[in-house]
Length: 227
Image 1 (cartoon, rainbow, N blue to C red):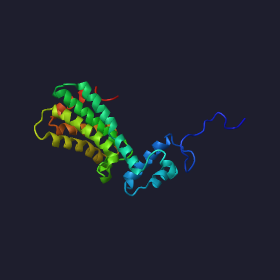
Image 2 (cartoon, rainbow, N blue to C red; image 1 turned 90 degrees about the horizontal axis):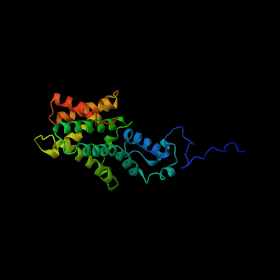
Image 3 (cartoon, rainbow, N blue to C red; image 1 turned 180 degrees about the vertical axis):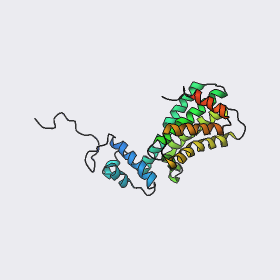
Image 4 (tube, one colour; image 1 turned 30 degrees about the vertical axis):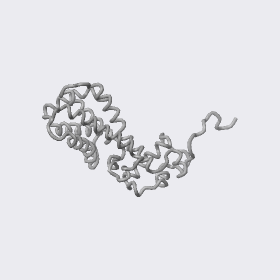
């Protein structure tokens, strides 16, 4: 009887350095390697060969999973928005035509979820949002999803009936969430949930809520947040 009988063969493309000890799939390893190299070395300075080598794959094998570097970047960026967008959709559906208190709780919950997601990643992918390459056609899906997420923030903000330019306030709110995560990353040593809560408090301050109203929103948001 052959010694390897009963052991299923590895599927997928061959690795340059043999089987990986990681539990990640080859595709996920490419994304993890790219996230590190794009944020540490820069997107323009990173080649697909470098990504493949970091992932332990041959360069030709990388193209089994992605068409090129922009495809990898687009996939990474979409992963930073889609979970928050899905959460925002469920949140808005659940709130319906709510009053200001419920809208404040919803806004707190969304900002906390979004900031926690962005901070919880190993690398600061939000720093790649402003790359000139992201204006290209391949990134239209990411830009559309981020625009829909911004609209969800705007819908909740509008229910708080604050004066001022709604579009500007929404832009500032999204910038606060993404920028707050970037600031928190500079110092390190914090847990994602703590960062998410601090960013959410700041979001309600921007929305004109008082300390007491923020505390009430934080308490009410507990039932809106995922466990």
